[in-house]
Image 1 (cartoon, one colour):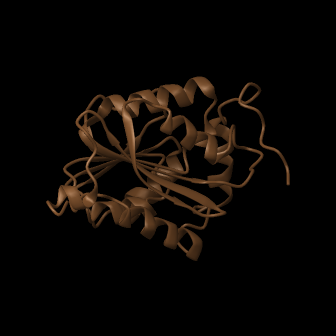
Image 2: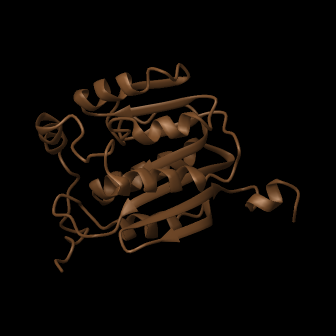
Length: 212
């Protein structure tokens, strides 16, 4: 098995990589047809600790497959991507959800100046070098409302175009003092974790429901 590049030598994946991927296919990762991703998206949404969210943010939304599932649990969703072809696909797919806004933005530079009670980092963090990932996590934590939730899910196997491993992304999230981990689902292929913004003290799902 190949070894992922060290973070000291890594650089943020250039946008041209993603533009090339979408030039070859409107769905370069086969989100619409692959069972692996359908199952992973379902698990991601099932992991959400709250029944309903006021305002969610999903950076790197790609074609909007996960966004559509989030829309069913949120009053408002802001989804962004840096590639025009991805945005066009997402706008078409998400047309039935008027409470979803899709727009162009490059992460982490174009992080929105607003707050959310849910942020979803899906297959995103491993594309960034140390500086950009630190900025991304810092802005995510700063824009989470107190007690808001952050869900992170990342592929764990080595990929040449990734600046780091998915596990490294989650290690950096876990080290942030503003986040407390509520749940962790680990498989050979991907890692799914749920964090909440502290303070206040983190509450489990049962505690939120008054059962514990």
